[in-house]
Image (cartoon, rainbow, N blue to C red; front, side, top):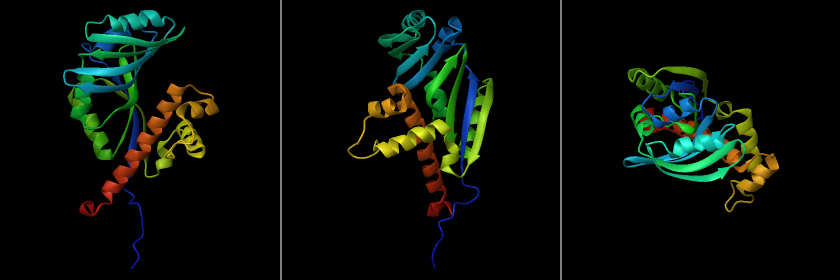
Length: 228
């Protein structure tokens, strides 16, 4: 007897965007409130024991001042400016403030980069099952964090998890051979073809791929023999 490959109606993924008030003792709360017109983006980060190594971008009318605010903060132990323009600064730095990583570990649901901070608040996307999302929200509430749910999408279709831009960039990458081994085009080639900068192309690709992979793994887990 043939077995139909049917996705159960209950199987799906939550894609949400949240805005959370930064705790006052986190360094980015100090810096973002001191520079309320600036947008701080944590592009990537990794916790290493008692410190975190991060790649961050600030867009503002005064990038030098915003960069200096990060470099001179007591929690930042190393700072390397990688690029600066009239309205943007990109830097790699180390900080002893690992509260964000501890919170994510406790909540059980990874935050998707970039994480955006503005004037004492930070916004981010996360993708997971309904149970994982409910656990994350409970962790926020138990911690007494002030938050806003900006958007919430439930879908059993991976295409429904992608923004139009993510879908366009992923399709362009697929057509250009970016996912082939070896690659038929580089990230720089793809960004040039789409008329966007390399960091934007990388960010959109990463977020789109993350959502698709999480959807696939959640679906596969729900259909495994031990979960039937």
